[in-house]
Image 1: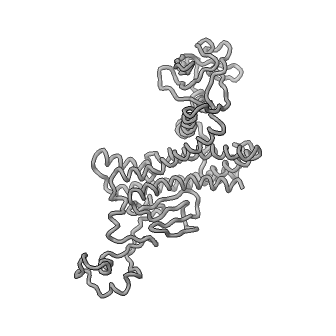
Image 2: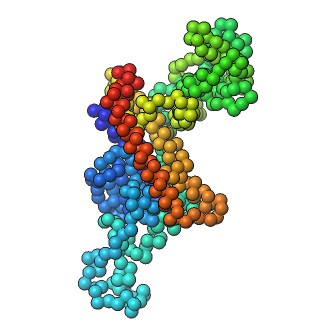
Image 3: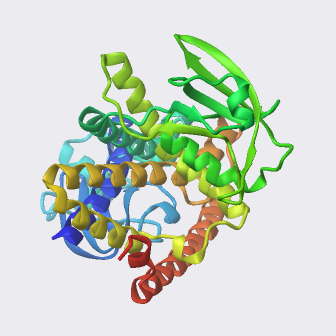
Length: 420
């Protein structure tokens, strides 16, 4: 049961991302040839109105294939060309007509012979309508809106789920509980109850750390670089006022590593008013987004191992195992844990799609931004070739990640991560 819940959860996030593109395309009067969840052969498919809705075999993605969109964005790695057809309403009245002698101002029957249907695998547009509904013919701001709408939907659903989590569980606000004896932090001026909001190397950019998990991640990324000379700046909120405290790290003989010398309260606290609730909801989403960004830092430092790289199969495996374990403590607990995972995955989808990689939304946005700034548009054929190369590379990467997922499942790497 838990694996079904995990698959449905991941499928919902993909659906909601593609729904963003779909709604934006419809608002901008762009023809949507197919709205699909998954990739590969169709399992279920039906044409409703002027769009084909499909569920496909491989739950690895989805697509919102638009009229005039290049092949890399179509979802099938091929450009929809369409076939001219004669519909039943036109049959029997077009064979004897010479298009060169028929005027546009003639009756609708004659107009249909000059304006045939163009069929895109069951989805039909009149030939004269195609320029109006073509994605490539829309203004730059409309194409930008359509491309970014999926990412915005990812962040939107992450915020909704985060609000539910904060409502039931609160947020892990970062409060100082004490300082280590004889540590530099003890003499620096910290007080019990200080709300630590920012931390970083002295004189450099400070990282925002409103939650206990934020400081944990920051330390995981940075603590290996601490030395006896490391000086840090911390910004705390005390009695409604901001205070900046500079202190040095200290060497913990027991742990044999450098530490902050501070202890924090690690529980969650409920919001007491609407402003706190909205702020904590923002912090919850921000934390999950920062995890994705920090992962790139960890990769650059060689701190991410192969068994920690996770694709769709790995995500479903870990989600199902986590939900199953948490269900032992009740339905509400399992529900909250599932929401936490979906917030993380939705934030991940949003940020990864914003990367300036050809074929991803971010790559397309770069092309459109270039057009908006320079007032010059890159040749669509060149853009399509670039996106095709990007899509080929992404498919190869997906295959590599999928094989890594399968190996980790077989070898039990994911089970060990979860303490199984």
